[in-house]
Length: 396
Image 1 (cartoon, helix red, strand yellow):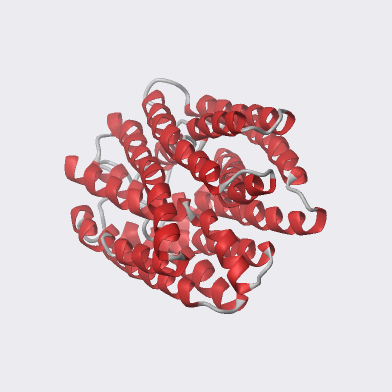
Image 2 (spheres, one colour; image 1 turned 60 degrees about the vertical axis):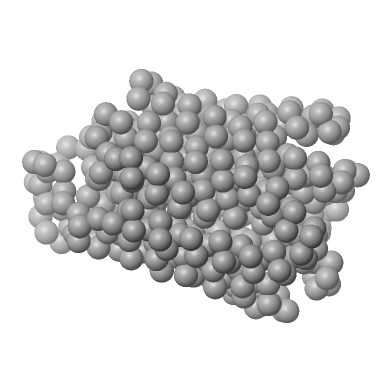
């Protein structure tokens, strides 16, 4: 188990850590290229949508053949996407590299793939905790990579910084060796066989799965809107880049504690209650930030509070999927749940740029984020976490 946790945590640290700082590139790229914020935001929106759309396919491949091959391909695509992102000189090329390529890369190097390995290799009594540990590692990567990326942009220029990150992404390849699995990972002992088609029909006909999936849309909207647009929002308020970098670092730091706590609490409390609390608290924190005067202190307090709630949805959401449906198609089903997350991410980052260009501020998007937090809190409360009953399964 130790090898799986260490290698899985390191992969997520790199993949999530690199992407967490993409908002730092908005200002230098748009200013040098002469693009609007919507151009950059649209590429980031496509990235999240591409990530989500590719996720179920990457997950199905990992469930069928093991995670190793998927991680290797994802790591190579990650490096290629970062290099071509640096070289893009048109909005279309930037969308293809920063959007499509990097989105596909992230689908093969982040939570759904790594959590599938954990679900199959870790004892069920420790799954929620193990997922919390891995998510906490990804959070630490966000904390670690923001100052690294800030330093690289400031001292080497934004293009060279992307080349360096591309080289770093290649470290995913040797780490993937520690996550090798047997071909066609076996179903849980005593579980009846189930085809991929049967698993999909079962999941999408099951209301708790649909509620969980809808709630995850809101998570994506929140984190990507804030992660990409926060630096520019703060610049508009008169703050320097050090405050934005500090806010992103605090989100990453406190996210370590929030995700670990969510995973640990999932061992003892109803996971639907944990999710409802997280979304409700997000709505309160965002509302307080919108209503309060924007000062450096309020920014740092907001970042710390949001950090505790940032990716703390990930362990309980994925643990519920395993708890209901079992481990056989975990990565694929987790990929479909995550697709909803990424559709939310698309709208969060794109609307941030679109409504800013239309109104000159981010105010409307902040209020949308508050309303969505309340919505997600309410729809997670009726989710049932018990294992689904399968009287008979037929091959599809």
